[in-house]
Length: 131
Length: 248
Length: 128
Image (cartoon, rainbow over the protein chains, first blue to last red):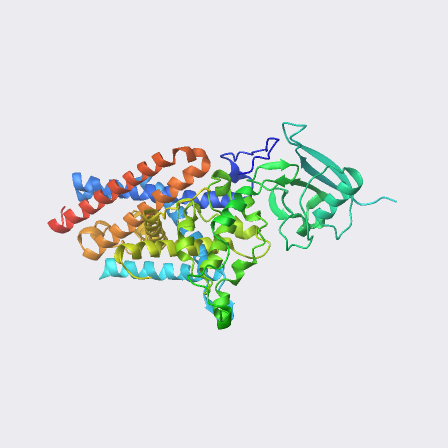
């Protein structure tokens, strides 16, 4: 606001590679880019469904057995699990639970939610496949 | 008798003389209990009086002495030389702020944001002094007390890459302070503060990098304040749709 | 004296809420779907070591179709929303508006297609 700046200030631009400066920043970038695989897998799955819609159920099943699709899906699974782990840790950081006088720590939320993930997955399989 | 030496590389920028910044190296006698600020004060007193930097309390409560030390935003008065390998450290002005001279940064943007969030108790109506003080329970105090520890050192802004990329972002400290007042049971200023924190350049720019809370010297945890403010924003938006004329 | 106006970004607040829900879905539901379609079925592991296959999820079971819809729609929204913001952080911040438009377009087309396929099969019963 005041125009008493007689000399130019040094303005430093942030380069697109800013995240390489420290491990924290790099891990953050990896965490954010897991979203690419989550989004891509969803689109590929919808594409697979379209093969069924335009063709037959066998087209969809062959699509699932395609080695390239399996390969990509396994990579997507790794990144999805990384997303889940970092997401659970963040939940612990954002929503600490008060127990008596102390608060829960993020790594505790991480472990609790991982256990929850296994339980939910098992329930999903039981409800969807065996019932 | 050989004396221990520490090498301090400091950014120099003198706009009236140079168009570009450069590093200047000083060799400073080293004692185990020295902090970076001690080294800077030694340089200024004994070696180069033109070195320019901010400091005041030298004990981590005033928030004046922020700098990027070996790439990390830290208070110079709270950074012990013995924590840095090889006794060579690089001291640069705090990242993401324009530099006025040497290690001094232009704080005006942060000051504007501080004023924007109105860091004071806002009442619809002040009760007269005869009615006594506003009472607050220990639980009510706990809802906001950690966020009131902010010393406005701006290390969180130096650490935040989103602020570096977009100067309009309200940023960690301003949001934490806004949240401090939003959660204060004595405050009735939500109508005034919500538009500031819930506009697009408010909390919505934050992508949870989390570095702000890592570098905060006072344990304010601005990341937590921002996320809680986002949740408030989302629930308010949903409420305003489901109950358009709903009372407060 | 400059008077500042601040406009609450209500729509963005809601989109952020959906993004967070999508994050929960991607964390809790996507792993099991990936396991079923990329490991259990192709390699004949439990629970697809018998007569069933993943298409059963969609046409054998209303709950299965709902599961697929919620998991894929939620993950798609979350992934695109976050990826679009990640792109602005690696130098593409100038193209923000365009990235948002493309992102929401992809999300809309994807979710409409997904809902259409699942609804068609549900209404038609099983198709071969």
